[in-house]
Length: 346
Image 1: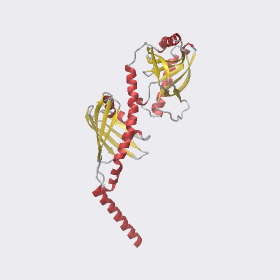
Image 2 (image 1 turned 30 degrees about the vertical axis):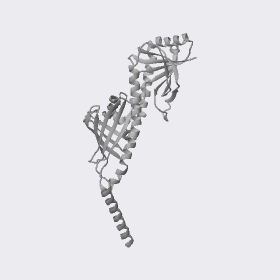
Image 3 (image 1 turned 180 degrees about the horizontal axis):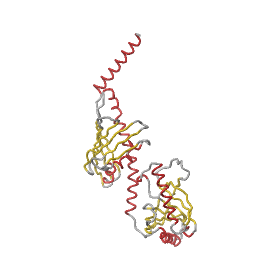
Image 4 (image 1 turned 120 degrees about the horizontal axis):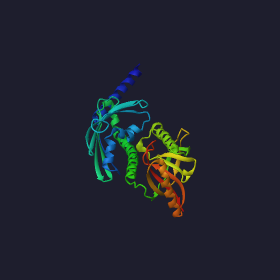
C-alpha cells in the first residue's frame, strides 16, 4: 500500500513539474513565417489559392490521405468560401474558411481542426518577383493550447514547413500541366506544317482494334477515351490538372484499312501499379516529328496525314507511327481539335 502511495506521489510531482515547465517556458501558441518562390506568374499562382476546389487538389494536408472526404460550400472562390472535411481512417475532421481576400495580393484562411473552437489563422501574401516568378509568404498563428498540450508547439512549425514543401511540389506539377496546355493552345497555327522535337511521354491507356467504316472509328475512340478518363479520374483519383491531352498512336497509313489498330492513352507524370488488366502503360520515346494542327470532322484528318507522309517522302525521311493528340477531348457529334505528329528519321 505504501508503494502505491509513493508511486502516486511521484506521478503527481512529475505531472506538476511538467505542467509548470510548460506554463513558464513554452508559449501557449506559435507565430512563424515561411517563404517560398515558384516559377509561375502571379495570376496563375493566386487562382490556385483562392479557389478551394483547386487548393485541395495540391495541398498536402488534403492530398496525403486517401480516405478524406471534402464538402465545398458556395461561393467556391474568394472571401466567404468554405469547406468541411472528415477523415475517418485518421480520425480527424475540421472546417476551413477564406475570411479575407485582397485579389492577387493576400488571403486569410481559418482552419478549425477536430472541433477545436480556436482556429489556426494563416495569412498568405503573394508578390511577383518577375513576370514568370512569384514569391509566397505564409504568416501562421496557431491556436492557444492548454498547459498539458503545449508540448505540441515544439514540432508545429516543422510539421507545417514539411507540409508546405510537399505542397509546393504538387503545385508545380499542377501548374506545369496547366501552363503547358495554355501555351500549346496559344501557339496553334492550323494547317501549317512544322518540325518539332518531342520529349518522351508516359501514357496510361488501352490497345484497341476497331472498324474503319465511316464514323464508326471515331465513335469507338470517343467510347474508349471515356473509359480511360473515368478510370484515371474516378478509380485513380487524378484531377484534370494532373495529366495531359489524350494521345492516339497508330500506323501512319492505316486509314486505308478496313480495321484499325491503335493505342489510346492519357499522359501521366509517373508509373504505378495498375489493378485493372484492361489498362497498361506505354512509353513514347523522344523523337523528331513533322507536325500539323487540324480542326474539323474526324474523317477530314486524312488529308492532313497525307500531307505529313508526302513531306517525309519528299525529304527522303523514313517515318514511324503517327500520334493524334486531342487538344480538346473527343466528343461524339463534334469536330475534333488535334495535333497530328509523324515521327521521322533518316
